Image 1 (spheres, one colour):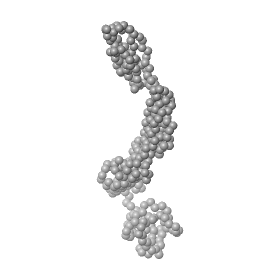
Image 2: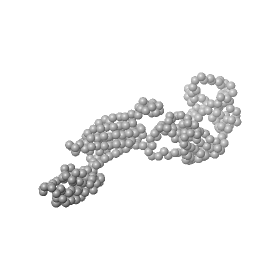
Image 3: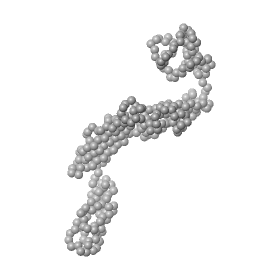
Image 4: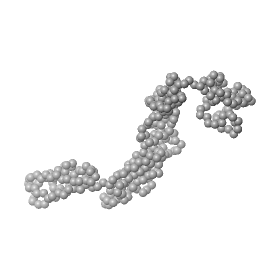
Length: 328
């Protein structure tokens, strides 16, 4: 649509055709901001609806210029490039110019009628505040640089979780837990941890964040520590504001068990070798060590090979060695 005014007559053209006019119109002068799209008067056939794009020219347009605007040359979108910027790369909203940075090719679809749809795949694990700059070229070679065509948060990444615990040596039914979750858009809704306590909240209040968002701070981490009864399968769950949730569980660790060790006879001055074995229900790697043992006795930490050569001056008697196996 286009509007012309010759000092007396105000005319409205749609696609180059005269649709309405007012012959006793008077010019309007604006000293402040110009508001378009609102009013309380019945327009009686004049434009009354949504405006997609408005261009205001400082001088009158001739009829041919209006016609050319309504009937552009048939040039399709031929090429589109995208420059993707994140918060870590500097202040968003700043125009870097058309030649700076890395420009990525974009796939165009639904070509025709002077328009094209486009898409760019960021992947399945992204979480940041982005700005999109575009460069488009039509089939006639005309190009346009569009800085900050879009900006906003994109979050397809679930919260990152951590769950650790140590079993109480004095009471194996209890354990000390540490739970934590981290996310750019974290929420306390959906938080679950073996500890039935309110987690400690950590907030994002860096300068780059407060310059973009109106909130002075934003939830970024949740942590909780303490002792509680040991569940069969300790687990933690956390969600973010866009519905990405994550759950992490740790099965209880079973202690390794030494296989039976028969009594051994050894002569003073001769060497006793014996391979100690053990089993672990979790399939963890095992390591061996000695507790109380005769002087000179050793054991290989990885193979369990026990070696002892009694001194020739050692008295005849019963000697014991304590073998310890650990799954780490």
